Image (tube, rainbow, N blue to C red; front, top):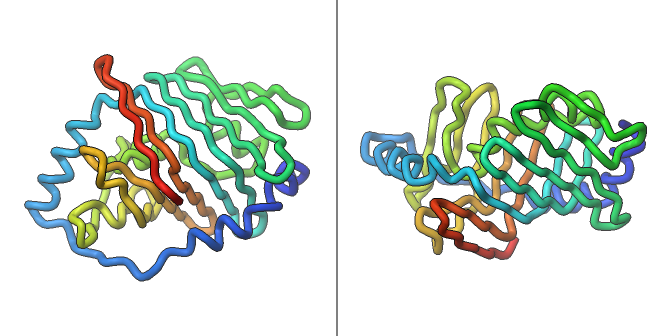
Length: 214
């Protein structure tokens, strides 16, 4: 675990520093804002075939790691690849309802019942992938009650769910409905920072791509 974290730590300080957000506008969700969010969620409810490219930073308060991220979701199946930008070393997490497979780590490949426990055991990373699958689209996850605050653009600014604070600091408003470009999730001491550079979503045979600077 420590060896792999050191490999990914080379660029983590720069990435996490770049992700420090400015003071955000927080508007408590009223009926109008929550109805708009419900409409967004309804449109994206069946968006379960997509690929995003971006950068990921993870910290547990002591160790940190970062890298270029490619995440493909194909229904209940996923492929999650992180490549360190300096060394080029990468690991790949893939799987579905039957379990998870982690490749590219010392002693691997490793198998586990689910992605979250496998990443925690092998890497020491606390990444709520099941919830993040919804949060990365700007949706509330099926993880219990959620509280939303909104920005001046009437899009979610802060989502609090399952003990995590999920900050949305930038949106791609050129897409309809808009999609997040910067997602920062925190459950002390754990932090996950995701900067999305491109989206590709397939729904009902239609495919669209969106790009944004980070």
